[in-house]
Image 1 (cartoon, protein in one colour):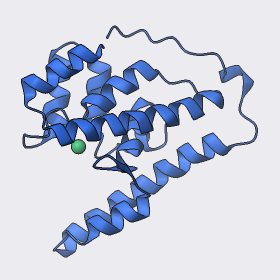
Image 2 (cartoon, rainbow, N blue to C red):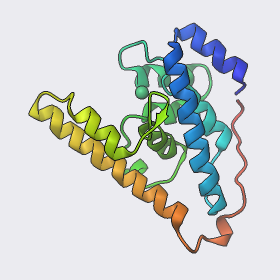
Image 3 (cartoon, rainbow, N blue to C red):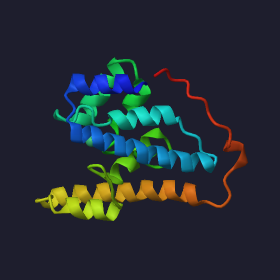
Image 4 (cartoon, rainbow, N blue to C red):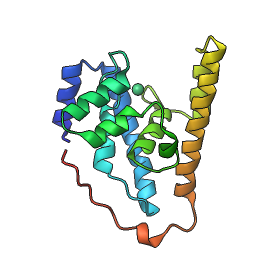
Length: 177
Ligand SMILES: [Fe+2]
């Protein structure tokens, strides 16, 4: 997917400029993680990941922006990008255990606040203060636990000592952008 098309989609959805800047920072973070994973023999489709990161908050101005943005990208003919956008706030149990474009986007989004890099600890301790009810705090604990689980999965893969050689071949991206 070209930068021109991404900008066109921002225009059509009235994506605010600060949100566009956030998306760019998340895309850079996600691509950085992907390059480290690739060096460890875990190939991801970086083009797809970049596009999904650039568009993950495209519908941020609307309610239920993850679902709305995902449905829109699917309608436009980008099902894989749509899939990663749909779960950028919450991964299924299976997705939590898999290194994929979806889980890398999910983590990259958690590691960027506005357009700045933050730790999970800083991010989640900041957002805890906004939870006013016990139910809200419980949901917050679950979200933080999931983020830590995904971070552990991805960081262990990056820092592992013995990556499998057989996985070193780059998988070709079959999606048209
Ligand atoms: Fe979002």
